[in-house]
Image (cartoon, rainbow, N blue to C red; front, side):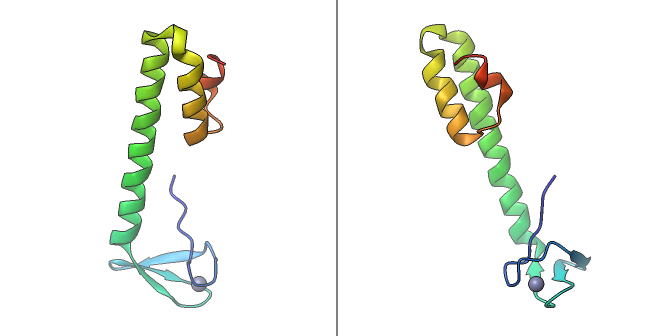
Length: 84
Ligand SMILES: [Zn+2]
């Protein structure tokens, strides 16, 4: 789930208006294009974690090292804790 937050006032109560998200509190408008890019970077972080988990399985000797890298990216990753 993606949380959209107003960068002007910090409110999380935004509504969609055409191609924009509009803050209910201060009225700031944000292009939806910007938040799509944020979603893309989230996906690429997830694939990095998947890649490192794969390495944990393929290279058990260094699994601990990879697990620590995963936890740097995603401190709540339960899979990574198994390799510590
Ligand atoms: Zn606002």
